[in-house]
Amino acid sequence: MSDTVKYLLDEEHLPKHWYNINADLPVPLDPVLHPGTQQPITADELGVIFPRAVIEQEMSTEREIDIPAPVREVYRQWRPSPLFRARRLEKALNTPAKIYYKYEGVSPAGSHKPNTAIPQAFYNKIEGVKRIATETGAGQWGSSLALAGSFFGLEIIVYMVKVSYNQKPYRRAFMETFGAQCIASPSTTTASGRAVLAEHPDSTGSLGIAISEAVEVAAQRDDTKYALGSVLNHVLLHQTVAGIEAMQQMDMAGAHPDMVIGCTGGGSNFAGLAFPYLGKQLREGGNMQFIAVEPSACPTLTKGQFAYDFGDTAHLTPLCKMFTLGSSFVPPGFHAGGLRYHGMAPQVSHLAKLGYISPRSYNQLECFAAGIQFAKAEGIVPAPESNHAVRAAIDEAIKCRETGEAKTILFMLSGHGDFDMQAYTDYLAGKLKDLVYDESEVAMALAGLPVVG
Image 1 (tube, helix red, strand yellow):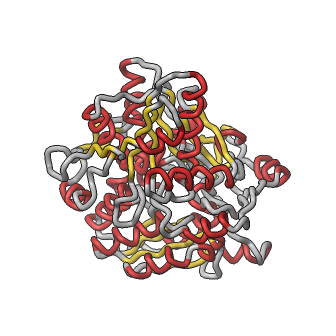
Image 2 (spheres, rainbow, N blue to C red):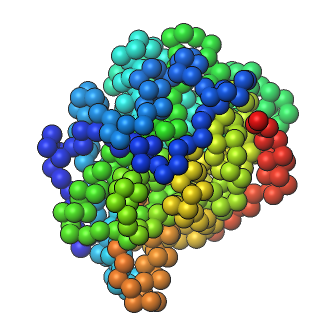
C-alpha cells in the first residue's frame, strides 16, 4: 500500500506565505530589459500588461510574501495537496530507495497551475481589470485560469497552441465550460498570428507565438491584462506553496530528500517544489541534488544558450536572461505540450548556470513507458509532462538498486493525465514516435538573438 502523508485542510497547516528565492540568491538575477530601449524595465512600463501587485512581486527580494486571505480561502478546496510514498513502485523496482511524490493533480483543474491562476485572477480583480488574455500549451494553464476567472468574475481569452488545440479537445471543452474563449494559435484574430500564418500557413504553433497573440490583445485595451502560467518570478513564487507544504509533510514522514525532481518547460512546477528546499540549502548548506527534466525534442536547459531573449515570437515582451533555443524556434508536436517552450524561467536558468540545478532530457517514448509503469504501481495516470519527472525518479531508484544506496527521492507529480488518454492510446498502439528537433532551425533561431549592449 502507498502511504499518504497529508495535513488536514485547516488554517493551521495551509501556508500563509509564498517563498521568494530572490532573497537567497548568491548572485542577483540579471535585470529584465525593455525590448525597445534595452534599459532595465520599470514598474510603470510593466503596468501596461500586468496589475501592480503582480509587478511588485516580480521585482521583490523579500523572502516571504503573504498569501491574501481570499486566495487562501480558494486554496483550501484542495490544499494542502497530498504527499505519497510510492511503496508499490519501490517494490516493483526492487530498490532500496525511498520514493515520495507531491501530487498536484487533486486541484479542480487537475494540475499545479491553479496555485498561480487563483492569485493572478485575484490581483487583477481588485485592480478593476475586466478581462485577461493568456496562452496555453497542453491546456493545463488555460484550464486553471478559466477556473480562476469564473471564481472572480473575469472574462478569459486563451490562445492555445494549435497542435495541442487539435490533440486535446477536452481541455478546450473544460475551458469553455468555465466561460473562457479558447482560440487555436496562430490565429487570424491578431496581427502577430496573421504574420505567422502568412509565412507558415500550416504552422502547428508554439508557446512563443501564443504569448505574442495574448500580449497583443492585452495591450490594446485598458480593461485587459495579460497573465502568464510559468517562467516569470511571480509565477514561480506562487507555486512554492507546494514546496512549503512538502517540507512539512516530509518532516511528518521522518524523511529528508537527497534529491528533488521536477519536469521543466517554463520552470514553474519544478521551482514550486524545489525552491523552498534549495533556498534552505543556500542559507544553511547541504548536499541535496535538484534535477530539472525536459524533453529531448525541446532541450532548453541542456542544449540552449544562456542569453537575453524575447519570451515570445513577435518580440512584444521584455528581454530576459535565460537559457533559450531562440524565440523563433517552433518545437516538434510531441504530446507534452506544456514543455514546448523555447525559453526557461530566468530564476531556474540562473541557478542552473551557477551549478545549483542539474538538467537532463528524455525522449517521448521512454517517458510514456515510465508513466505507465508508475500508473500500474500507484494507480494514477500522470500527465505527459509529469512523465518526465517520473522517468528521472525511476532511473534514480534503479541506480540505487545497482549501487545499494538507500537514497530518498522526492518528485513533483504536477498533474494527472485524464485529459491526455489519446496520447496513451497512441503510445499503446505504437503510433507515437520520438520526435527530433531540427538543429538547423535552432541554429537559425539562436543566430537571431537580440544583441544586448
